[in-house]
Structure formats: C-alpha cells, structure tokens
Image: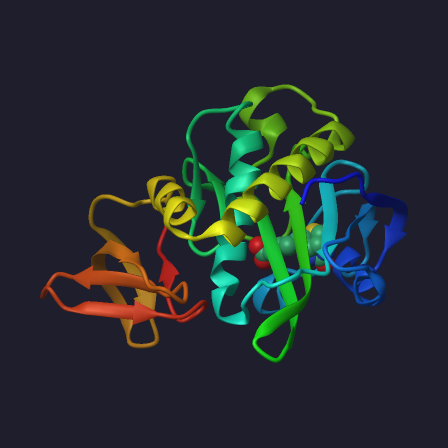
Length: 245
Ligand code: BTN
C-alpha cells in the first residue's frame, strides 16, 4: 500500500479521531484518508486524558485505513509501525529520540508526541484503523498538567512546517504499515532497539506501588515485560504500569 490519499484540513474540530470515524467506515479496502486540524476543542489522549495543543502550533491529525487482512490479534504491530514512522521523521531533525512503550515518542526524558490508536474489529481482522497523532512542533510553553512535554521548537530553537511533517509521516507510515503486514520480526527488532530506557534499572509504578526493574521485552500481544530486583518477571498491559520519570 502506497498511494495518494484524501486529506481534509480543518481549522477547528472537537477531535480529528472523532471526525474521521464515519469517514473510516466508508473507505474502500486499503484506502487511506487523513484529517488534520489547527485546533481541537476536545483533543483526546489515552485513558481519557485531554491532549493540550495551542491553536495552529502543532501537528494534529488522524489517519484512517480500511485494512485488508490485518489480524486483530496483531494490533500491537500497528503501535510499532506508527511509533517507528514518527521516529523515522523526527530522528532526521534531532538525536535522542526513543519510543516509550507502548506508543509515545520521547526526546530524552520528555514527551514529543503521543498517539491514540482506535480500531474496530470484524471477526478475526481489523475492520477500521484510526491512528491519531499529536506531535508538538512550534509550541513554546505548555500549561496543562501533562508531565514533561517538549516540542521540536524547544529542542532545536527552530520552527517547522506542520504540513511538510505530515506528508513525511504519512509516507513513512505506509512503509512501516507494509512492513508490519509482512511479518513482525524485523519491525519488532527495530522497535526494541529504539525503546526508551531499554537498558538499565529504573523505577516503575504499578497498582501495588513503586519498584525497580529493567525492561526484559515486549510480549507477542504488546505487553511490557519487566524483570524486578528479585529476578521475577512481571507482565503488564497498557496502563497497568507507569514509568517514574
Ligand atoms: C496520548 O499520548 O495520550 C495520545 C495523544 C493523541 C493526540 C492526538 S491529536 C490528534 C488525534 N485526535 C485526538 O483527539 N487525539 C489524537
């Protein structure tokens, strides 16, 4: 899949993920569509969080695909494809970019981009995919209580065109999406290589409290596997564990 795509740009919308949902249902097989916006009145993050983004400063978009033959059990491959596509592009602008499990993009210890993946399932396959991305580009200061945000402007001192970033990310997404469909060995290796805090012992928080552990790996279904100081392996689904940064 590599194709020209429909692109709708809006000045203001509640959430590009919400706006694109009915469009996603109408797409042909393998067809792709993008909705971007200058501002979202109800930008959504993971776990019901609000996504902060100053008007006209950042890249906010949702990409929808009607996938053909994407097994629902392999949904984590999508997270890896999306995260790597973003890393491909922002790594050409700055060093120190890593992927924080499951699908955040970090610069050093700060969050540069977040993604919200929403899918529908038919039988054993994904029926629609919505990949929502918020990349902090030209925003100078962040006012919400979101921890440790950073923008490309903060990192480099320069402003960037959100439209040109979008074109590059859409292109890399298609490459990474095809890679994810072909098999997961390679994409998984690249994802693991790019993982935030992949080596060393760090503090994490789960429902029982803080503990120190190292990253052991990612399970087939995308769970984070940690090795604690007692040498026990602990496996976590998304939102069951937090990195203490
Ligand atoms: C997160 O890290 O919590 C995910 C943030 C995802 C934000 C993007 S902005 C474009 C798209 N529309 C939304 O409402 N959310 C995603």
